[in-house]
Image (cartoon, rainbow, N blue to C red; front, side, top):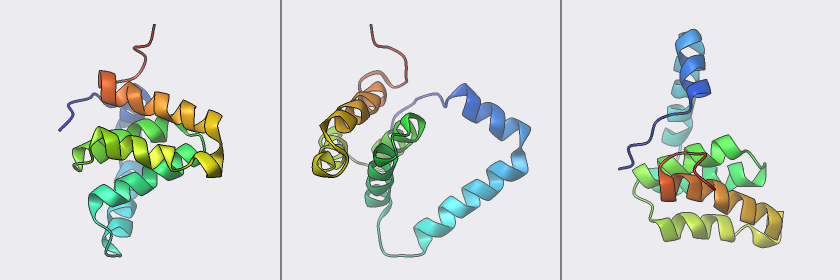
Length: 112
């Protein structure tokens, strides 16, 4: 399991708006329990969706959660690479860099 700190903005919003945070957590749990998809696969799907909308923060979050759910580095990379014909090579390269922020360094902002 990765021991990575959550982004400061995310933590601050959770502290300032606990009811909102609880509702978002509850919604996330509810949708995961509504069908037969296992947690690891669900995180890989959400990771691909995050990459598709070019949401760096969501890619970081779902890469971290996919690892915590047991996904290997190869599975996480493959989930992104599969998008090449859908979102394009440049978007895939950006998403892989965001994924590697988490996989290689455990957090963001460690590139030279």
